[in-house]
Image 1 (cartoon, helix red, strand yellow):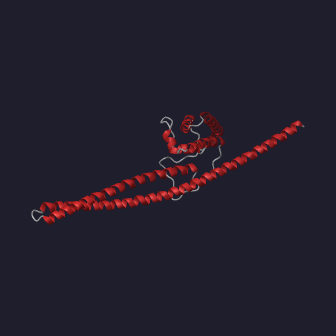
Image 2: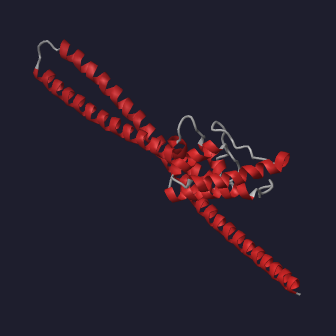
Image 3: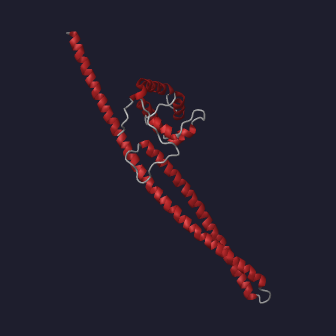
Amino acid sequence: MDSLPRYPARERLGHELYSLSRANDISLREISNLMNNDHYLSHTAIGSLLKGKTVPRLRLVLEVVRVLEGDADKIQALWAAADAEKREKGASYREPVEPSDGETKETSGWRSSFSLLELEAAHEEIQEKITKNRAREKAAHEEYYDMFEERAKVVGRILRLQAELAAERGDKSALEAQLASLERERKRLTKRIQELEAELSRVQATLLSLSDESSQVNERRAECGNEWARTEEYRAIVLGRQLNDERARREELERRLQR
């Protein structure tokens, strides 16, 4: 559980921007890449904003709204409330420090404390690794089959030269030298094929591992989504009760005033 005090205005701003990002089905990295260079936030800083943990400068928030095609006036009003809340809290106001792009988290299993946004970022990173490994696998496969085809051509030439040697009983020295050269080339190609087979095995093992890791992240994302929905439902119930209590107090005051 987050031990920091709650900041409703800051959280409302983050929740509104998070809802816009979900509606547009856009990732944190995509938002960051689409921002102007003069008004730029990293994907980790955008994640903190959408989680309601930070209140950046207005021009940066409006740039995020532009990318998300949201209502700038509405977001500006929410930002003003969050900024006023920040100034009102004064020295007691805290914004948690997010890890920089160069820092890493533990990868041996997924901690339950990861938020949905952090898991989405991790899922995106894994998908990038999978894409790169698939490209490596494709390139290795192409070279692998090219080597096989080239070796087959060399073997065909060897067989033809052997046939010529068998037929020729005259000057065989040139043909023997060419045959020896082709044998060396065949050995080189065979060695390269073996290296490519080992590389393919490593790439396929990495892809399998990344697929398992991606499945774990997807499961945790689903759990976080459900947990977030339950939290929102609980907060709605609490707010409803508070409204009912407020109405009851107001009615009681009105009855007393009428007396």
